[in-house]
Length: 171
Image (cartoon, rainbow, N blue to C red; front, side, top):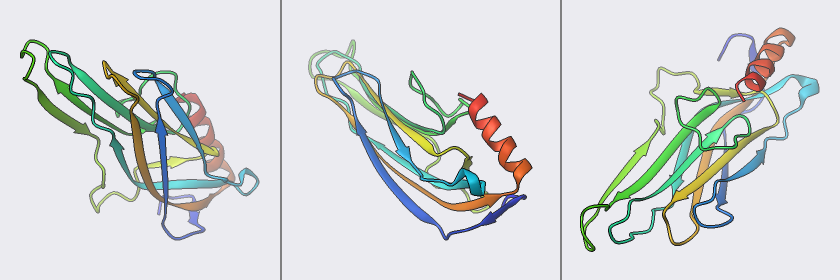
């Protein structure tokens, strides 16, 4: 348990999905945690699993589907090196220059299940998290499914204030 926090629930899983509004268009969904700010309630994330839909196989064209889960709203796709991103994943088909029948598929994900030595992978101090997806050069819309595991906790006042400020400033 992180210092300054007291668990108020057992581990729960939250499932969500989002779909592009049009092919190759960045789309984000807001998922509410219904936390109680009056009780200094936070959500301690222990694992995240992202499953972006496979990209379309288009002859001689590179295609991709990218996804991320972030603690704050984003206007562009986020990656694991961004402070507010808890997980990212991408699938791609590299076919440019390989002719009409060639192509190689690739998958890249951040760590889905953390090693046992980690107590948590992130703390969400505001009421929502955000799930994003965007395709590249696809003929149809793409989606992503996500599952987040974590538990509710109560923070003391100074820790809660620091967590909220840190999260808001990482946007």
